[in-house]
Length: 466
Ligand SMILES: C=CC1=C(C)c2cc3[nH]c(cc4nc(cc5[nH]c(cc1n2)c(C)c5CCC(=O)O)C(CCC(=O)O)=C4C)c(C)c3C=C
Ligand SMILES: [Fe+2]
Picture (tube, protein in one colour):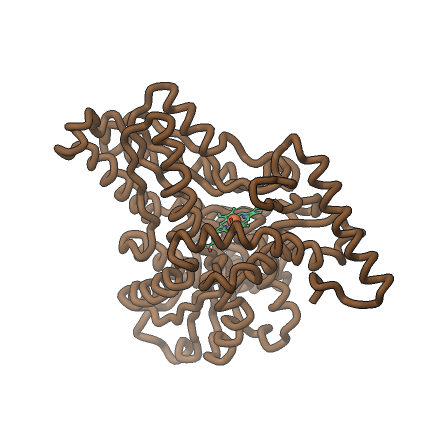
């Protein structure tokens, strides 16, 4: 069993990382931190290709094994059909995703924070579905002759569909490129339990709760004691958790408990909390309760004011700026909820960035799995990387790249069927309501079969194929 948390309860002395001033041995060390993120379309013209990249990923949408070859085709169909709806969303938030800009600012802030802690490091950004792509980041790492690399997904909680997908790609790149063999590296799979993350989130929430005590809010009959803290996480299909063993839901629930515990410890009074899941797409069941249903339910229960907390992502994106700020706000207003305040995403929050810097520095000794395991076990150098990995994983939650496959096996060993994507045309949904599930599947498969038949019979590539 591979550990997935980065908390360390080990009583053994962890290997240490030499900080400045450098020794002659350290002179050869070039430290890098690789931030993994999703990426997003920068312009409306990018949207369809971005969606294609997303739906071509078997960790987002997976056809049964015999049909695996058709995934690029299905991804073409889905991205083509979904693009107009998705473009509407991006248009509403200014014509593109802010993810790249924010992630690059976070990378710079992290580099400064590590420097302030006396660690020279270069921080790189690797996006899964848009620029700067993972492959480009790796090329830069090679060019800069990085020797020690900490891989840090910018998702606080682990999911097969997010960090898992990025790590799977990274592992493939490492496997295929012999030039990467000497690069020592380790992965922090999730970090929601880091004290700085919990504190930074609690700070932001506290500020919004207290804002309900302003004169203006009081005149509206509200106050901090009427504020219900509403955590809204990006959903995943239930099958990820129930069948594939994705730890995402469990980690999300723990995150909420930790933050609520911190608010309680500070003695902040408010009107309870809820965790719900947003952004569902597709004909399958997603994690429940759904955000919109929960807002309506709370309104019926007499909740008057919400502090809405996006909890699964650390930068603003379409699902905070459009889905929460526009769609769910409207749901709340229509349901009679008077107070609406949304907690901003962490972005470059200093408490958060400083703690992320500490996480990366604490991970550095683990880049050399054999040495680290030897130090922990008190034995000589451990030859077998898997054995070394087991020692480390059991105690630190850090994962050497070579065992990312093992980590993913733990969650997704059987490579079960993952959801067929949402295909919404105008007002008519043919893929994502539960009642339409059967017809959606049939229609999607018929369309696929028709296009394939056309291509096979005519020998020509249809417009959907590359
Ligand atoms: C922890 C965060 C996320 C999880 C888990 C996740 C799973 C997941 N997402 C889709 C489908 C889409 N996601 C889209 C955008 C998007 N997703 C996340 C985060 C998680 N996704 C973010 C931050 C973004 C926004 C990027 C941006 O540009 O701002 C989209 C595109 C937007 C749209 O059309 O709605 C799709 C589609 C699935 C199917 C899935 C789990 C299987
Ligand atoms: Fe998503």
